[in-house]
Amino acid sequence: MSHKDLREWLNGVDEIGELKQIDGADWDLEIGAVSQLAEINKSANGKDHALLFDNVPGFRPGHRVLTNYLTSVNRFAITVNLPIGLGKQDCVEAWMKKYANPPCIKPKYVAAGPVMENVRQGNDINLLEFPVPKWYEKDGGRYIGTGCANITIDPEEGWVNLGTYRVMLVDKNHVSLYISPGHHGRIHRDKWFKQGRPFPVAISVGHDPLLYVVASSAQPYGLSEYEVAGGIKGEPIEVIKGPVTGLPIPARSEIILEGECVEGNTVPEGPFGEWTGYYASGARQEPLVTVKAVYHRNNPIITGFSGLRAPKGVHLEVQIIRSALLRAEMETAGVPGITGVWCHKEGGPSLLTAVSIRQLYPGHARQAGHLAASCRAGAYCGRYTIVVDDDIDVTDLSQVMWAVVTRSDPDKANDVIKRAWSTPLDPMISPDDRASNRYFNSRVVIDACRPYEWRDKFPPVVEISKRLERKMMKKWGKIIQG
Image (tube, rainbow, N blue to C red; front, side, top):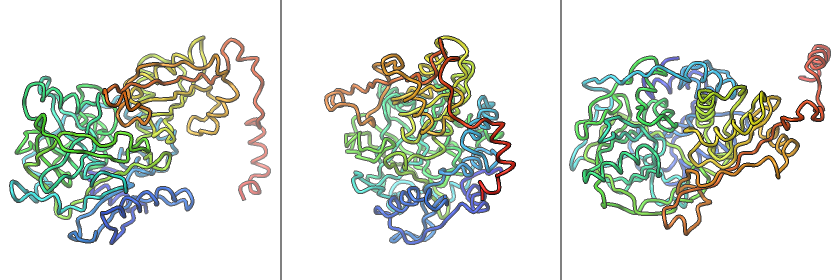
């Protein structure tokens, strides 16, 4: 199924019965709470829907907010043009097969697009006309940018980045922009400030979910997410040259904010409930974005995500994409015998990764674990990487932990990596380190494979053989499955 923008995507989701409209929820806590309660309870009733909030009290009907839009495998598959009906690991493997090394297709500049149906500049700008949610009770404000794509450019090298960084509403023509250290948008910002120049930024807060998928993933330094998205689609993403910043903005986005930051011009930002499930980054002074132009479609849609304590607040597309990127990087680096990679939602999903291998030589498990913990896709705020044998389903945390407790000796199985890349969002950054901007962490590689030297003598697993399973299912399947 091919789609060009969010509205075509919503039509596809509606066709498979996974879209639900909710009328009358308030922007103040209700949209966030309803979204997360739906996510928490979906396992109990087996139903999973994207939620489209309309008729928000105090706002014009048709000004909508979309949440929970990438919480099912089917909706992720629609987003990246894979078949629906796949399992989690099947989806990772299908992604790997089709998109591990997609051709990069540069964006196509067009003169106009639906996003320019309404143009607001100067005194006509009023961000308060949009139903921007306050997601949780302890949030420091209303966040217009959660499922967003923030567009920036490197002033020295000229490449364009799309990143998902949180954006807080300040007033009718200002927002604040928080970018964690080490991310490409932060590197761009620091370069502009070092040159003593204003930092230009364009913020899309409603768009084709594919742009969110690539913007929230770890793409190589210097490669534009526009090119990655174009490669996945098989055609260029249509963009317009931003009238204010000159940045390429998605022609079919729902809402775009164009503006700039000036070094030293800051505002209190946060706290915000983040993907770790904590308010770890607290409140601080962050750059103020003066919004100089707003463009939006008729009846615009804000795409939003809200964090929640893991595992309930973790969205499936993050697990799938990060798992696929990790496996692709490990295989590119030359690690053989990889049979599975899964980033568990209990880890947010950066904090807990499982890798399964078919052991081929001494040190194979440690090699796989250290690479998974340190390559680009795994480097940011990792904590635990567990390597298991290929008889373990890496998507099943119970099986992974069974391997840990039965196949690893704590004295021999654990390697600690120190002074790795962390973030202010990490709840384990101490107050002293936080005050000094020391954002390092330690991480552990756990070798939960059968010891290589005597793996053939390891006690056999108690299980039904595949041969007996087939025989019994043929004879008793109707009763067993009845």
